[in-house]
Image (cartoon, rainbow, N blue to C red; front, side, top):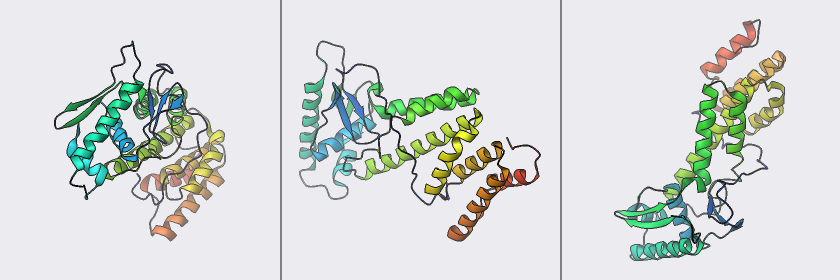
Amino acid sequence: MHPRQGEGWREPVDVMREPPSSAGDNQLEFRLLGPLEALKHGQDCAPTAPKTLQLLAMLLLRADKIVQIDSIIQELWADEPPRSARTTMQTYVYQLRRFIEKNRRTGTDDNMQLLTKLPGYVLRIDTARIDVYVFQRLCQQGHEQIQRGQHNEAARTLRTALSLWSGPPLANVDCGPWLSAYAVELQEQKRNAHHLRIQAEIEAGMHRELIGELRSLVTSNPFDEGLHGQLIRVLDRSGRRHDALAAYRTLRATLNKELGLEPCTELQRLHHQLLTADRPPQ
């Protein structure tokens, strides 16, 4: 998060959400970028018991890695575990194993398993079935496309990544300390992906098309200097330098009044270019 960011990131809601993979409706697919869902035949069959769902979220977000028993207990009960914590946790593990066995594809190479591996447990699963990992791979692909100058392709890739979101991550999970921290990290990854997508579209020449969206975003996120910088650039590149200067003045006044700060060095440099350059800053 930008060090001067004073509010949570808010953006227009995506109306399209792609499935995590194309493995088929008969294979469990997991969504965590919104409510946690376990989809089979297009229907959610996720466990309903709160702590079982919480443990499932933890294992999915650490897929193919050992999740230590002590970490699970801290996540489920924070600093006040009951005396029976280990026994109760083992009950939740048993319930998840039953859930996996019940929903595994029979007669296939579906190798999803929940294994005991000291000092904890590991969920073996193809991560292409989990939307978080699909999102992260698409974001990496979009970043690489930007570096290669493939801005139209990058914008499409990042739009696909963002379409996987349906709301706050783990929205239906009672998150303990570990999951709460991870949810914040995921929100930050989404925010960065959104910035990258807009940057790709700016470089692809979609200046006028972005003005309305960016005006909405800076209204919802008044201290996000990255968004303000993008708005100023698209206004200037659309031949609206007067509006670009006005956007800078509005940001500067807000930062001065609310935080007692000046815009960051990058924005001050952009402002100077607006005042002195004969062409739109690049």
